[in-house]
Image (cartoon, rainbow, N blue to C red; front, side, top):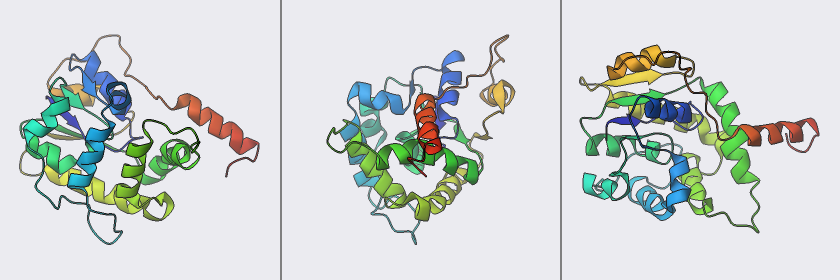
Length: 226
């Protein structure tokens, strides 16, 4: 493991993952790895073992003994970086398991993040076809419950603030830490990692949700969703 990208979904985590791959840090564990490798149960167990039942008045924190590096390595051993959920659900635990890894917090304003979440993860989960159960549904239900108690509008901001505070705290004490916003590009990332900027290569602008967002926008114009 060489890099921990611990920002929330919809903060450029996929673009950052693809950027690391172009820089030779590969493979990267991103949400898209979960389904193709049938890792859903592993991550559901990690949520149960590390995140207490949701309470808007409490900090999200580990209340049991965190997993050892060997436990994480059960699936992460082949990877040189992690990005996005589900790994970003466990900043403190992964930082402890990989103490020498630089940490990147991908971020954006809460307002733009929340708007993007509403059109993607939140909309997709709330409007899922319950008669056609997806293999990812159990994991999605687990993290929607753990993060904001199943009510993003009421509790999403609180989770966003707690998560950012937790990850920023990991950068204290001299650990390599970078806060990275969409649009920062190659320069900041490459300087942080100590590598050369790729010549003539645009910074990735990756988004698996592009077509889904277009569908939501069409439905909104037609008055089918708010």
